[in-house]
Length: 333
Image 1: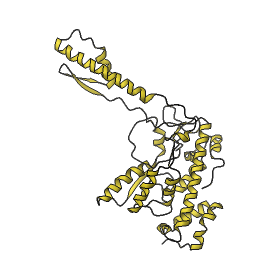
Image 2: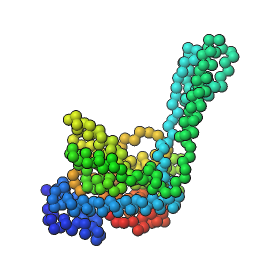
Image 3: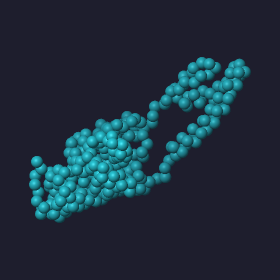
Image 4: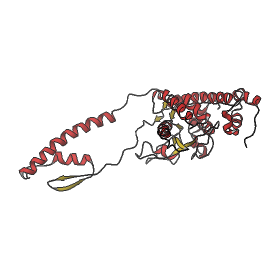
């Protein structure tokens, strides 16, 4: 049974939080479970959640600006190169294998057709013309894909790194909660005040891709994304309207430390990470699969303590200068 907290104590939550009792207030709010949604708790608890995420937003903006100052290379949203896809085509009634589309294009364009029969030569000449056209289109598409982006002076303007709350997110949360899929106050306040953040990237001493030069440190850069909430929320609402909705959904809020280190190295489907199970009517909920198995706000607190890179907690040798620069003066939550 949840401990009882009288109404007078609840009305002081925000004042106590602002006075520095951050962890104690969140512990009290979380301890009463779903009762936090009822009077007299909901209004003061929601005020604390909003103040917490206002501070979190300030901290994230500060960290991103500081990372720009030290030349941090943020992930650009492109996954590592996919392996070439083999293909087989029929030439003169024979199946010929090629290691990739590029290999096929090169073979056809370089082929000497003079020694073939008129019928086969006609077939190959037609294939060559089509291939030349296809090659030109592919070259144009590739150029558009790999064309360098204009230099970004502030990654707060890069929506791969930071994306402020969007109106459709708040609308989705209202629909979900009206249908019974309740979010913890912490995540709801984050969605309204912060949005998406992804500090994945590389730096000579701070954070590393898992490539041939990987030093073995998983810095676990802070990543909180609402994309899966939006995707699963839409699916769940559709099922709910049809009377076939599940009672719970597990919403992934960020990739795990290993996956973050692989983003720019490998191209593969990502199926898991750190998630929250909904519905969760409490003030806060456990961020599952995260190494500490603790609540969402606690994970944010830990991330800010390490300047956005909590993976350094378990390392004996650390980039103290960079971590101190990133974390100094951040607002306590």
